[in-house]
Length: 256
Image 1 (cartoon, helix red, strand yellow):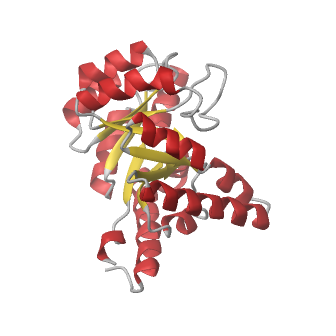
Image 2: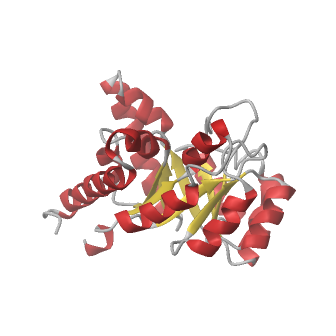
């Protein structure tokens, strides 16, 4: 079962920029946070360039591409502006997410089924530019089938419902975990690479990390918040350790 041993960790550094922008200026620097993540064992960096630039800015994307020696996953809305930016910078990956200006964070998956005609030219243009396209979707068969039909090679399963239920309703959390497991299996059967993200903490990550079909987790807000108390490097190292322990359990041995 060596193919399931390593689960990649993408660290989202958006909320370092949120803190910076609360006061203005250039501190704390999200690019410096990305460099810390590199040293702490992250496998990639995720950044969401929102239309209103509420945290990450255009200059941040340029500097991340120039200064950070890890793949950049650009989260983006399905708009012509964001497509143009992605094509100009050429990140390793682009994850298409829904976006509403009034939301505090991404509230759910994109409707790949209902927005096929809108998404198709964007997915195609990114793919033609050798940018790995992923769609951030709910753990729902119809959405996964739609992602496959659109030609996206990757899906990222929205784990928010599971993580919220984990806090107060064990039965609901178990149901949501089952939904994620079934969705991950179906996505792999379709030939899609499967990622997951949204709402993870030290407590919630291991059950999802045990799902053998997953290749990558993207985690941001919790790590940046935990950094206030234990430091960003230690938060990432701890998350990495929990993910590795989960994979070792699946493989039936102990992490090295």
